[in-house]
Length: 292
Length: 141
Image (spheres, each protein chain N blue to C red):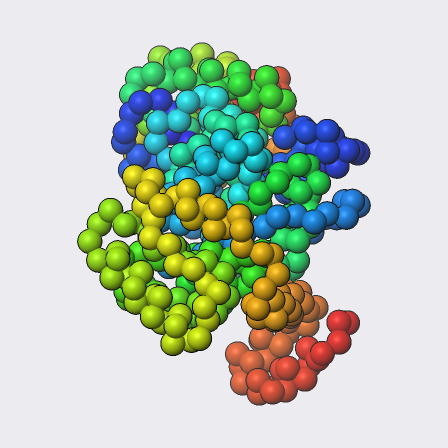
């Protein structure tokens, strides 16, 4: 993040299309700053799934096709921060082949950060900032490996779950509860064996769950097959659906987590927990339900 | 952390990226074979404070000045640029003059690179020039 002086009219400049100032504005928001952004109705897609299934490569395919259709695509690629050092290695964009050279594509890598007021509180204003600056398709990518990442993706209005041909991966996704949130499922790597089988088992899992509104697509980010069909399905997916309530719940939990982590007595409470001088229930009492 | 040009060896870049992460930095790795224009674009979109360039191909004397010039052209003058890989001593002076603040060769301890970034951060806090477009003779040696 840049540490220089914040220009007085970063927002104004970003709104006129200054890409560098948009990027700097996102940094300010990420660090807890706020802007008076005009009311927006952003178009958002969350993309998640187990590690290594090809999410970033698939997003790379989607953004190329969107760009061909005249859309301007912004991607917020979220990777976890190291709990030990607080640092993060962000390498999603290297898999998105058009990310670095196309004027209609803006990719920003974000670390979840473990510090107070983490990603949840800044994600909505970031999305609004991007929408205000004319980015017509906003994609949020996370690894669907844990609740924290799933909560991030719940900030999007439609969710794409990506899986690979190994059936084991999606079981992990089911365990984490992401299946219930997904509007569309893509089984990637259709160019290698077992992907049809994986798609079939996801379909039957969804049927058991009684959810017929979720479509399953067999795609290959590698050779491009099935991408157009997937893109059309994403485009025709309504923003509000049966999963609204689940999504709102994840957003609520997300903000709640941030509040807890930002609590002024958090360290004191954790010290007391560590030494065993209070119980977990007492700790919850101390941080309380109010905001002070 | 970026890999400019055609060389396909990124073990070094990955080790450095990992070491910087373990040192508490948020590191964006660009992947292989990026053009100077792409690297400048990535620095801009990511609003990166520092740019590490790893090169082993021998093309550093063309690629690195092009990247530094691109950063200045786009107004990214405050970005701290450092380099590593195989860069002969005889080429260091002109790269420093182009705005590369540190050049780390084989055998450098990763802690030294963390120290460099910390000193650079302190200089920025103190308002001392350290960016690629800020006139300064400062270099890490």
